[in-house]
Length: 70
Image: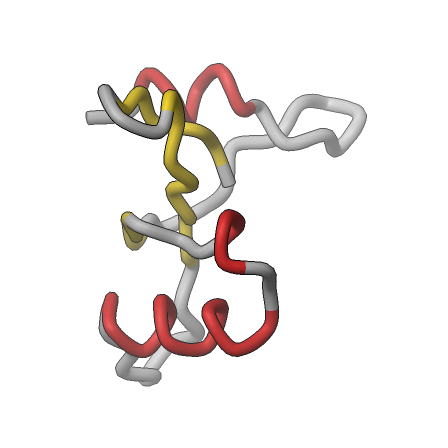
């Protein structure tokens, strides 16, 4: 998850989701699930489906690459 700039809130959470092969998942499904699990200010406002999560050689998620993605 990364923060997207927002004029009112400062930043809003954006989730990146990799779906399992053959699974169908919508943006609304992800937003609804997260809304049930977290506090209101942590609710996901945007979802992007990606093929693979970019990771470094040590296995850490490369958030800078996610932020640069369109």
